[in-house]
Image 1 (cartoon, one colour):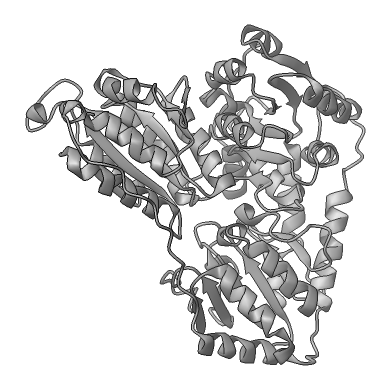
Image 2 (cartoon, rainbow, N blue to C red):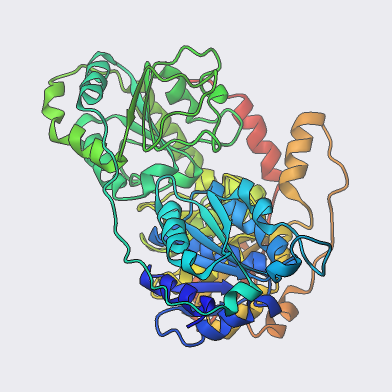
Length: 550
């Protein structure tokens, strides 16, 4: 067999199920070899960025890497934004690119560029195959690194002449390893700090939605009653209906949830990535007592200096704590602030849940209707824009990985292709993507992919004819915003052109029924909602007047 065929066999041995992408001339040998695979399905996309976002959604939902593929030059550069997004969101992913013959890489040549060096800053590892015998080791290393905490993207380049070379090499058999565990003495020290704390609070990040950590966290909270605040990407780590759920933090502005953090005399962080919500926003005076529990040591930052770090498998650490929870004994705690925070947020969430409006719909109402239609395990995917802030604040979850928000690299254009990827993982669940009219148009071409795959997805576009989040932030900072407006297509004609079902909802009372109807339709459906983003500045003003109860 040749190198390309060996690469396919190695990917099969690793259990890779999907490769999303756009082929080119320089990876033709790989594509011909892939055509013979019985276990890997290739999904042809309309743009490489869409392929990367599909692979990211697959990785976040399964914990296993899918691959995205592009050819050399522009194919590789088209991939990079989606790859960077997945890497910073800690989604396991393989990135496969073609390359010109090694005989011309040293000189100026058609479409030749140093692709590996380009990918190094946005992946955990990037390399080029220069000899057939190296393929088994490269694939084994790439998959292991992509899956290892914290997960991310790994890049493999295959030059066209190397792809044709004959080889007798064989795939390596994957062997999983057990993640290291936290030091028992450190766990006991954490118990000591928890015994002394009167107002502890838990700040949960992205790491807590992986490897069953959520289940152990819930057990801990059921016994102790300690409240949980989650970042955008940790939504669902505890059930929103639980008394200890204190909802979401991360608006980059003071919100109701900040009151519980202010009152805390101990902050326990679990799987926390400061890329989501920087500690200078909740530990400005650098006086918080912090216990850091994660797979990796804490990032060095002047506002984040934990007194104690429990480093190792997060699920194991929580399970060890739960197994010895009786050691805590009776501890008198003052959880009044947490109870007040939850009560206050519940009032906020109900404020516009039953609005009756015409010609425009408030974000709060749109999300309340979406929550009423979606089941506990159905999946909402958010794009990036003003709607992302509203989803993070208003849309509550019952299970982990039921709301996918890109919040590390924060690339627009994620939700439509991500929904296609999610529907492949869970074809029997309701999949809803919410996009702004700006973000949706960035990967609008994947409407054809969704139709070709007959993806059972619903995409809700919030229309405001502008880059709404940028306008919101400029208005906050400068008191006005620059010209950020644009035109839009005739949405229903667009839906028809791509063979989608199409709905426009002008009255708030019709939205919930329209959502139910869209989910009952076979194949993809588009819902367009004229959104009332005057609520953005109203929220900013209201948050600016928050007074925390004591």
